[in-house]
Image (cartoon, rainbow, N blue to C red; front, side, top):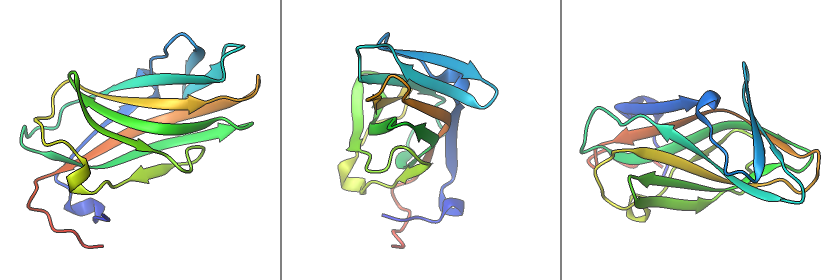
Length: 150
């Protein structure tokens, strides 16, 4: 599904400063975002990012965009969106070492009221000098009546 960005009425985003680690990696917050590096011998990790709720409680998730960059093999392998304790979307990320955007099919997303939103990113950090820099995460929401244009 491809939608024009200007057709989505609601956007919620979080900067890299909101990134929290799982103890298997080091998260360093800086002016450019959050840099995640491995704690050896770990080569995988996950980070979570709380995202504000959209103003409409009937809005449906339509897009997820992650501004990131990887180095020395560091990459995001999976994106998960959770509302409270409910998994709304889990998808693999084919090119998670550059800025990427996921526009899932509406049938792949659980229909649930958006609240207590958290984005969880699974990371691959295969080398001692691998890293991922996360600048921001933006979720785009729309009403289910928006038309698919792609």
